[in-house]
Image 1: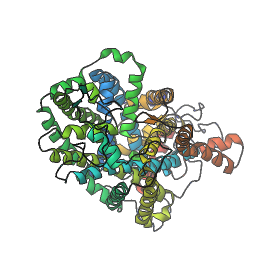
Image 2: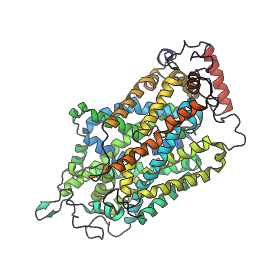
Image 3: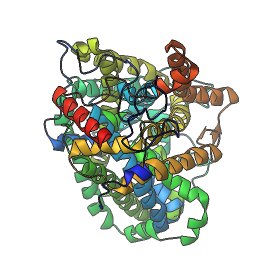
Image 4: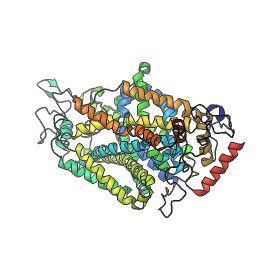
Length: 617
């Protein structure tokens, strides 16, 4: 990339707000003698930072760069790459969908990933204390904490489903093959079978054995969210086992996570490759793949296609959740995170496309075997992972083997994402309250217990409705808003030029004009587009064509507000406790605190020296 050595002054000046002087001026950039310099200066005394930690234990670091890369890959590449992207791609124009998808990757996904890794690595701190860069918006850090708590709570229930399926693969006959089980109803009919001359058509009138096994056998699902029923004890057991496994993997922080990801982040790729090789050798596989990738160029004129591409990139990579910031905070300070931040998003994108071939090759075979069109059997979300694909597996030779591999892959994909989200919660708390750092294992245990108790609402007879409600509302808008706050801080409040200066000091290389343009203009515009379209295209939540009552929808919006409300609350709190005029209150809280900067005293001294040289040049 082309380096820019002085272009930043015109493009990315520090803005407080819109009153920054020429570069190198001695006066305060905010033109206020009461406010501190915007050029990396300090105005607010915040939490105790690198100076004076006393005898508190160190945060630690990754043992090597590979651990960071694998953790990022495990975090970004999750179940959604398998059950959401392939369906989204075929529904939005097949191969044509890759045009907006790749554009959004390079205009929004990669710049956000680079920005968050740079923030975390530079300050070596979690997603609450990272807002020392602009204390007025520290509430966004607490919002991240709430979002992670709510989402990890129900996400672990999702990854407990594969555990149940795995246990069933050890039975002599897979229980979702036939319609003669206790949970089956009169509506059960194998895909492609005919009854009284009428072919099964996947309507409400008939259900496949896999559908009834998942909904009646595993979930024991009730009629609506208004019928919560009791706990489904086999699911409670799977949920508990999953939480125990997660705790054992993360109880020593990055020391244990860094070792576990060598297996959990790589083995799913092996299984995906094996499943692809098996899939493409099946009759009808080519038809399924062509159905997946055949471009429908006319779809590019549809605004919703572009919105879906932007939303998929955004939620697949996971900026705004604190996970990227937290993982990068354990890097060595001088690590060149720029290319890490390109590698991980590109591999995530490639894995999504690759997973589409895995899924649609088998769906093509399923269509070939049953005579049912691919468009009929193709679904997205839990229906693909826990109904359609398991149904297709039963038609293969050695179905137990393929089912075992598929559900191991799903579990590991979900587990990696949970690692990072839980570690983001723990690190945020122990960085904010350093006294807890010596009790980190206890904090981890208590957090896992609290989230397990919360997840019990999703393992009742009506639990799937609650899970769908939380998934629909709790993070969809909140995380986008958090990212908008982050890019506004970096590009306009702290100042893009100051941020670029810090990144260049950290990695020892120039940052090109491209990144500056993205952080200040392009990415904020795209995030605003995502925010608006998410609201505009929002539809009331439903599950299996069952509509939710108004009180449930209100509950969903309350789960979204539970995180977002921390941003305005903390703004009001900071303004209230800061002395001085309203202008001074605002300007002083828009400046970084004294503790903002590199954690290492040696790196901090070098950074302060570099700032002073640039300010006097």
